Image 1 (tube, rainbow, N blue to C red):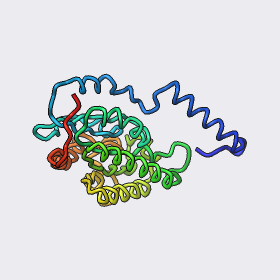
Image 2: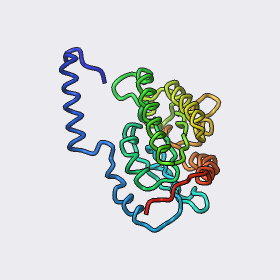
Image 3: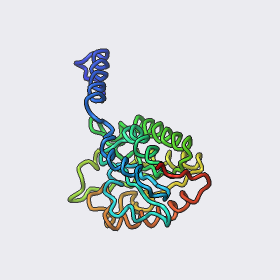
Length: 250
């Protein structure tokens, strides 16, 4: 959000800082509390299987049967929260990934960063890419420091207009999404991390979400998730088969 012409820049900065502190001190902006009890139970469990954490937004939060994709001898821990940005995911990375003794983490972040709530969708591109790149890099760095294997996912495509499409789809620009996916691909390669190209898997010849793979234009439907799961499963097996996989916390 940019300052209003009626509000001096200095005053806008002070108001923004005060609002941030109020939210930080009185709320849970990253929603770390969402999985606090589940995380405690997971750490207390005696299950020795390596844990693959899927940190994401609504894509993982709504994924039916995500846990069934776990390779033999491993377990998937879904840690998606609908509506989250990559910044919120980074803030809860310690609690929801490191803190549960993850052996591997699958990162799918950025769809809500590119959502323009206060300006034209294309205008958020530069800032969104800078934010996503910084946050995904930080998550990957934390994982590397803890010996946690990483896989990076591309953002799914956006559907062309149709009756029933979520209004928020129009707040996202396909070119901005493409620039984010291009960066994610290069970053994954630079780290030697698997890149899960959900975009190519779900896109049609017009560069939009394949209509029979989505019901709302933003999220996969059952058929879309089926295709995603088929592509993700072999990568999960590679993640937990790699050297140096840590033992889950007990």
